Image (cartoon, rainbow, N blue to C red; front, top):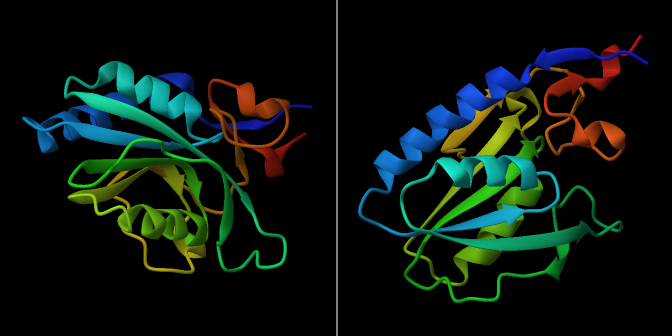
Length: 171
């Protein structure tokens, strides 16, 4: 099966470098806590962190959507941040933001830990499908109607691809 590549590895690398430069400027002189929403953001978080010069602490958060309330974005945390975030600058790193409900829910949970600031960084978003107001401070790409996989996104073997594909455009 052949898929349509929508962003090559080189385009992803270039965008990651641009986002890292922006984060380095925005957080100059401060330490940031990166909260990686596993599993979709693992590849992106790793690539991003290698390019950051500001001091960072990495945290992983894993979750499962409640099947009884999929439209709420409410989740069950299966792996949580173990260190305090009080007074810290938090950067939440997500894979693909579609409705925005889940990252908004998780960011609201993290806000209860009283960070000094909290921002969202994502591989991509689908603005036409956002169901909630969710400011994304740093984003590699805006996606249209494509069903994206690769670079950590997706559920099948396509997740391991080093580029982004449109799985709906398979031949």
